[in-house]
Structures are given as structure tokens and as C-alpha cells.
Image (tube, helix red, strand yellow):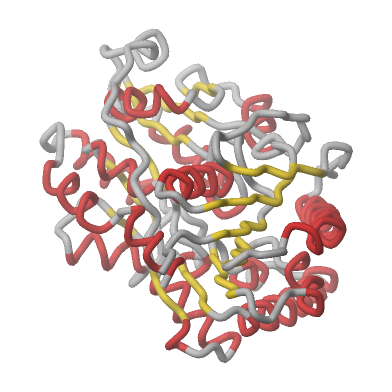
Length: 388
């Protein structure tokens, strides 16, 4: 019996996007291909996190990449930007599906977005196994928003995600918290709903190219990655501004891209808060090594919506980490059960500052967190969940 599968992955986010879902999808596809599986990807030309389409012909050996969306223009307002993405990707996938789904063993939509898969349902080959990968629960984030338009959006998100998730033969969530929320919201079958954490992607190669950015004489407090609503960027900036007056030799860094990043950078008047482009992937380990503390923020009341995919790499690097999350969230419970440091439940500046100061005086490298990360955050487990 041939155990090698022909897999179609459907997601607008893909290579060569440097962070978030695009990077996750890229690393997953590379691993599937290296294990001998035949992978085809329906995706957009890279556009995230800048939300500006850049035509790309870059390829991954052994992988078929079919791209679209390079002419789309994304509005500045988040809700309209998401609408353009949802509708644009839906039309692109509808045009390509008939040809690319032939002879496939598995179709794997990566949610969000959800509209494309929703519109595909009548045209999908019923014999092909559908394995849904859920990165975010959009309904959780929309629940915090007010106004008639947002209520309408939440209604349609609920209908679309419920239909999509229930249509899949299997669902893979990146946290138990997400799974439990989705089972409750959408009346899902728990038996076909699996959980597998994101995976480590570090290569254990440390460069020496960031010394002028993260100077050793400074105390470098760093946020790196996508910067959007669910990271509470205004709250994070306000804390950096507050702490910069107190932490001795403290320098506070944002490594990111995109509209929110650019706006904060433009408005910033504090010389102790610095803004940098995302580092190339080959410099990621150096970034963590030269960070005194990495901050991992979550907007209040959203922890059920996603689990940050950067968490495994930060833990695996041994870098000190300060997580701001909801009380009794999965991350907090993981930190408590595995004796990891540090997770807090408040956006109060004084509370965050106290936790940060305690981390800064602790031992330089936490070998327990490295061990825990290597045991829990593995790509092989995720691939096994996709294939079985």
C-alpha cells in the first residue's frame, strides 16, 4: 500500500511570506514534500504583513504552487481589508478548483479565510478527504466589536465557519482552548476534532548580524512578529513607553511590518522605542539570543481564538518570555503545569513592569523551557494528524 499522499492545500498565505500563517504553511509544506508527499498549494502572491501584493515566481522544489491575487488592492480599514481578501480568494479558488482537485487524496483548507471553502462545498469531490486546519477562530475576535456592521459580520462568520468546519472529515486546532470553543460554538463532533500545537522551526544556526541593532550594553525588550488587533499594539506601545522611563538602559524594540506598525512608528517620539523590519529567517535565532526578554501579547478575551505560532520558537531558543494572556487560558495553564516563566493576566502597566523586572533578574537561559518545547511542539505530530 502506498502511504504517500497527493495533498491540495488551500490558503492565501504562503511562501515567501516571512511570518504568521504564511510561514507556518511554508514550513509544513516543505516537511510534507521532504517526506515524499505530492503537495499542490492554491495561494495568493505574497501580501502579508504589509497588505500589499508583490508578484512572486519563487518556488519550492517538489511543490506545485499556483498563485493569484497580485492585482488586489487592500483598504486600510481592517473589516474591508478582510472582505477583499475573503471575496478575492474565493473567486480565485473557484476558478482553479476543478483542475487541481483531480486525483487528490486530501484537501486541506487553512482557516481563516473561510468564504472560499464555503463556496467550494458543492463542487468538492466527496471521495477526497477534507482536513481543516484552524489557525484562528474569527468569531472570537468579532465578539469584542460593537456596531451594526460588526454584528452583521459576526453573523456571517458564524454561518460560514459552522458550515465549513462541519463539512470537513477532520479538524486540527492549534490549541485545546480553540477546539473547545469551536465545538461549543458550532456543534462539532469532538471525535473528528484533533489538537496539535504549532511546531518549532529553528535550525540551531546563530548568525552575528544584529549586534548594532540589539546592542549588548542595553537591556533589549523585544516584540517580533505580526502586529495587529489580536496583539493589542496600542496597549503594548503604551507599556513600552511607560517602562522606558524605569528600566535602566532599557531599549524597547518592535520588529514587524504593516499598517499598524507604520502608524506606531510615525507617531513615536520616544528614542528608547525602536522600530525595525522583520529579520530574515536565518537571523531568527540570533534575534532571540540577543533579546533580554521577548514579549508575547494577546488582546484581552481573545485567547480562545488562537495560539501564537511564534511561541514554540521562543521557548525552544531559551529566551526569557513574558506572555500577557487571559486568566485560565491554555498558555497560562501550560506555563503553570510545565513550570515555565512568565505568564500574566493583566494589561496594567505596573503589573507588566513588575513581571518584566523579575524576569530580567532571573537566570539568563531557561533550559527547562527548551526541554518542554522539544517534547510538545513537533512537526511530525502535526503531519501524523493530517495523514491519519
